[in-house]
Length: 162
Ligand code: SME
Image (cartoon, rainbow, N blue to C red; front, side, top):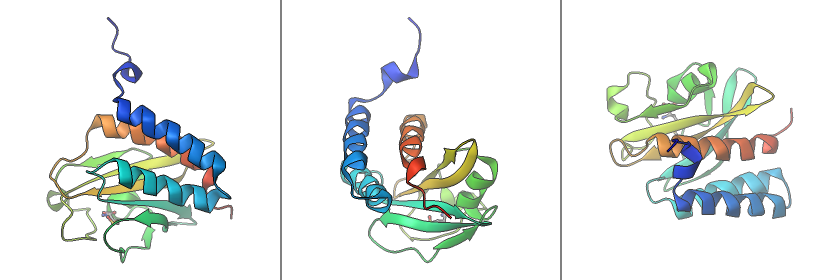
């Protein structure tokens, strides 16, 4: 049997994607839609402790909608700085099993142990990213990456226009 990854998608990922497509279509505007997206992800996935969307703004990433136990001080991150800035610079998803072992890590919350950052592309360019912090070591794997890359595609048209 072939190993098409889509066949192995957990049912809860398919359900969340369907719900998000509906919510995005029904939202009164792009900002509300993006906010709703982070809320749905946070509600449905217990290991997504803090979720933020950063949008590219010039040479920085600027924090857009977020949800989690506390606000981050990192509301602007230069592209190239931190794990967020690395993902934006390379266009590659970053999965960090142990943030304290990664010298690039910009600390936000004392509870964070692991992190995933998934770039958002529009027309081949990185226009933003999804950043999720987890309070367990190695909270994220390739299943999260594939799922969040689909979510990223859904978020791309919601970016603020400059
Ligand atoms: N940890 C990120 C900074 C953003 S906070 O996690 C919300 C980084 O290293 O880039």
